Length: 515
Image (tube, rainbow, N blue to C red; front, side, top):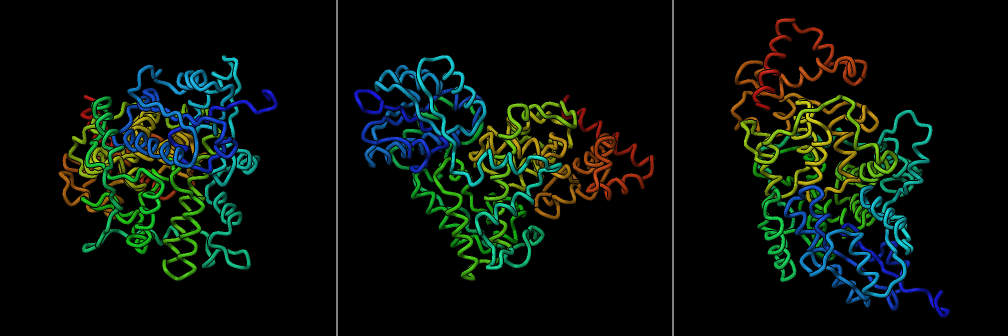
């Protein structure tokens, strides 16, 4: 206390904390404290983030600052090109403390271990207090997740998800049982695409003056980063993000469940909501969205498999991977169970490959900063694992190229689910597949130079021989996995000459890939 009054606080709001009810703002006094938002070089370039991602966050931050000012907060906003900008969050915190006469910092816990570590080191090195508050925008705290995980031999998402359903009451009947008598309807959400589907796509928003200024800045300062900047149509305010979700409910949700895993050339969004970037930046409230979905199901407006599929992704998978992240960091990023060390192929940046599925997904990622979960898992992620790419390189690519990617959500998805680098902590098996899966769930193979039905030879789909070679070379680590019993029986039944041909094709392809 100073003269009987609480000291003036600097309230630090990070780029993925654009929520008016976030813990740090709730604990602050708008009549006394100062809110700091800062665009800094380090956060935009610790990996070479997609230009659209940087533009989205800078524009959303500027709009949020305007929203806070209108609500009566004193906002200290630092732009990337402001004179004296030190280029890092710690540097801007130190400047803002002096500039505003504040004696302590109030911040909600960052979503990435890297930035939390920087703030904790700043707190230890400087003579001012930094109060780091828990981020209660999530439904499961880190402590609660650690308690759930304690003593379990396997940390399976399905078990965690059921606990979250019970906790929230979402899609639960009056007797405390799951609606429809089943917890999970994922098996109903795997219809392959069919011709004639009318796909509305996400809602597109016009660019305003604030965003136009940001686009000029991003092109000037990050023009050499990956990605196409314009056209730019993302929501950048809370109201717009809520309108985007309304649009999804009204136009796409009816088909979301059935075609959740489907892929079509020229249809990057299929029937997906495309709101994860808004959720992860704090513009949308996850429980509020799920309650709307629950209400729509109970009103008979949507099918149970669609409602359950959406809710599972938000209160199940999203909460679960965050729990894994904080439970296992900082060592988790170093996991490499399969001992993969190959470099990331250049076509992950250029899209210059004859594999139509890869080129389509990378081109889409370049243009939209978006790919849906099956494109990430079963196309780019699957190939990287089959090709023995270093999982950390894959992680850094995913973190850089997608607008919704923050390390807490991206790292476990990449290392655990996509690359099996944690040896099965997160996923019960490697998500490896041959070209047959891609052909069944997409139309990519119809326009590919390679022949998906050929297993060996110069025209054979590389996913085919790489898949069997992957199982063959990792037999000592994977053959005992019960979920891989069937493919290993198939491998064991193959003629030795055929296996040798698969190995030769895989070796020749990998030689060309890294020549």
